[in-house]
Image 1 (cartoon, each protein chain N blue to C red):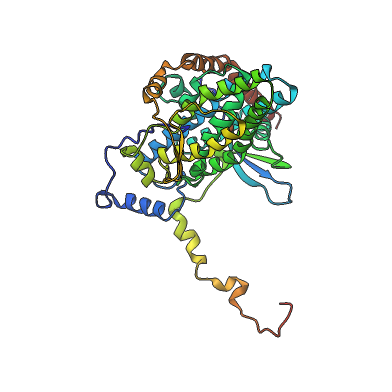
Image 2: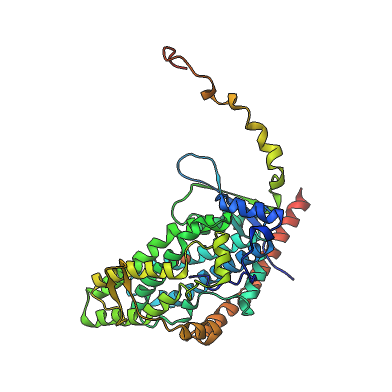
Length: 94
Length: 330
Ligand SMILES: [Fe+2]
Ligand SMILES: [Fe+2]
């Protein structure tokens, strides 16, 4: 019997009140062990205050081939950025 | 090098003209320093080369725990023991980051471990030398981790994203390893004449194997040319070796130790140290399995894997049982 443990993706929130960030992956038999292993593998130097683990098989990703279709439409919409609208120097607090 | 003499499986470096459209687009991304991610299209030879290199690198981290683990119970103080344990634990972590990076290319963890145990994939030859005295722990941290850092820093810019990211994490941790080793050497060199002699003896034995870690001169190798083109390897073995010598000689001078090389001398014109010829026959013997500890290292790894099989299986059985219970209760 192959006893290879499933793969988990590990997310860590650092002390600075930021969002959880993907740091890597590891194998573990269940979620509890995945959290414990993540603590040993990814937080040996106080890298975080919180750990999330998600089975890699449960992650659904966009396909590399869809990159243009998904992301190019944002390219020509520069008006979504505030810098698109120059403001006169006299106008303050805007 | 933690990964030495990687075979790309290719006999010549391809011309742009011989490339398919996919290959050309791939090479263009690499030339633009765009990272390649696991699901992106890549040439089979690129994938195979990376699997080989990352896997060898991972095995080196794991087997590399053995010579140092050998001294944990005999460290001369509680502080040194705690430090050495932390260092060895880091190496386990390095192995795990790297196995995961290799797995993104479609090879399983079990397959990699089987390949190591079957002798199909190597680990760095440096770990086939024994750690005979406590000073060897100092020399290993200072020289072996020092050489590893030299080799790993350029890999942080490797074209394959998961490998580069693993290397960034590893490099952050490595300088502690090198410094704790140098610290051990400093203590010994400031100690009794016997302690200083022990430090010298360790340097005498580790110097040449450390220089061999960078691998044979690679100027003429097709594999190196390919790895360079793919930005898997960014500096030649000889460049890295020279940097290592240049940085290490003044450190050895500071310790008041003598590097065991009569030809070692500062070359004003080159702005580098000249050093003696390396005995590559020794390197190839160790690579073939005839180093002082090859058999012992492999036996230890295989035993650890086999003796741990019941634990891995029990953990899966336990997880399945709890799953089933939770489903029944729902
Ligand atoms: Fe390491
Ligand atoms: Fe290290």
